[in-house]
Image (cartoon, rainbow, N blue to C red; front, side):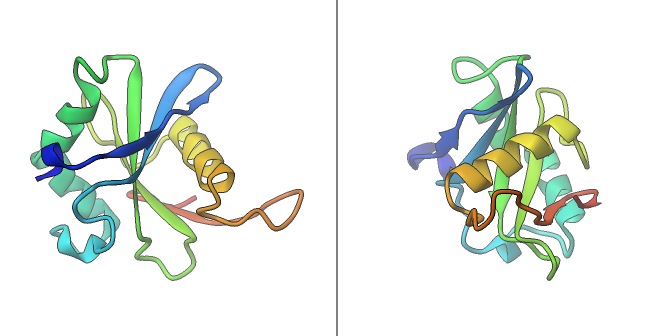
Length: 131
């Protein structure tokens, strides 16, 4: 039950649009296979149907209509360095440009994806495919 755990969320934004990132504390963070579904899209559909986590982080007192939250999970695609499921106040979309920027920023700034060059190129997996 995630409501009894500490969920670590890094606040981030892309030109003012909040796209915070859950980096730890989600029950399946070490075993994304435990989420129902064979693909990241199917797993995001599970999060959408069982919207307890989405409501927990996006509704008052923790959130509001201004906030999006991205759930970091282990990638399923072999070419991806990081994967994420997008949660917005009304739905869980397959892809979002501003949320991708936020996830990339948090992944690099926290060392989840090591910054090894001045200009970094890496792939992320969203429910809609590789970014």
